[in-house]
Image (tube, rainbow, N blue to C red; front, side, top):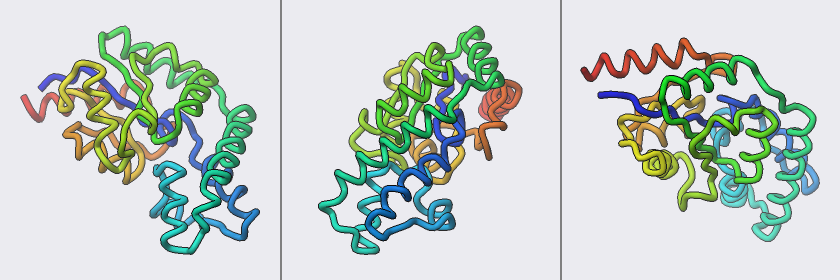
Length: 210
């Protein structure tokens, strides 16, 4: 097996935005007397698209479905506000992606966020220039934890899924990558996304299957 591409999740991997999404959605929900606890966020909701979170709140806690569109739009605006305030380049990520690119690896982003959020965060972090493809939940019919986005990323890059190393941080993303047949490097935070760790994972993956 030869790794030809590296595909990154965004929130919690390249952008330290987990709390931004959590706080933005709760800010919107609080207008109608709903909240998501941090424990529920970490155990269940983390990594899911906003519309899926709203569906779950309707099924489990009776959130009126008629509010979904308004809440989704409001949450996205609150998230954009957070991005402009907090999203900044991290040298360790620019260094990692530029070196991977120079070594000939194809690079893609695969996020459960909407396209406008993906493009804004990647531009603000100076990472958009390194990717051959940037995919959002709008590019697939089923978002993570379904494998669709990683299968689509492999297709767009022209690489078999087993030759794409995925960098992920949460259960839903890991399930999606494994379901697509991709090897996975699991990280705990944005600070774990370093060139040497990615190269080590590539080497271990290729060595195991050699």
